[in-house]
Image (tube, rainbow, N blue to C red; front, side, top):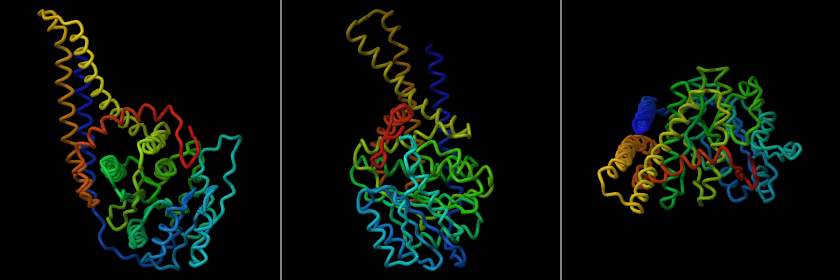
Length: 403
């Protein structure tokens, strides 16, 4: 039994180090986009689904109104998803001052026998129907964008002719250690997103900064057949479009196209967010992604299993001490598994450090590496917790309780 435990733990450790190293190298091999001014021929429809975003909606609309992309070439469609605050009023007032902004009161998101969950997908589909742009770009109402955002996405689209373009997202307004952990972890997730797409694994993207051709969206019938999950308006759509256009799904590695969003403020909000993200993992059709996620989960879980076995044996030995040779031999497997646990943690720490250093450097957030060791401790805790309960518990999102 000890030998099997050691072999499994060692194999999982080698896998984890190998996959993270592969992601890091693939990311660094992606050419970062430089200054490439767009010709000004791409018409764009920016879609912003919004529910109870009165605190944030003005900021994102203001940022978009200051884009250095020709105003006559883009429109903004705010889809109000049954807000019960001033979201609609604020966006409507803003639209009156900016004629190329559209504000649509969404009324199509009606409950279906009380089981409707794909609210955001329904909102985006409704917006796409009224969109006039060749290129659809989605973002969230609580995000902030740079003046160069549209210009650089449009230039990349013209150059690469991508049917779908995933672009980077980063946290801003980061406070204490907990939010620093979120920000550093999120940087790592963005690197995995870019690396995965570059490696032909179409499993990741972020709807806060996602562009795709309207024609491509309609050709794959939008969210049809992937509309059972509340989440997945980004990742599941990427996979669907990639089946039609495998060579035209791209990642835009460009600092001037980064969209910024805020981390969660409380542990409860963080867990609800991660439960929502985890809930769509069973919908992945590419079994490679399922295998990678499962093995990473088992790797971190094995650290806990080995450590808890040692702790259990230690407690038992303190309650029922046995000073004989036989007692030592009975305790020896626990000591060996403790050494394996230390080995696993050291390997994980080293590879994560170089991986996250590369990620934070791109986003110009090297300051986040100050919280690296705290983040590592939290990472070891939250992966098995969220990986387990994210697939079985309900979660709340935008004031709605969802499965």
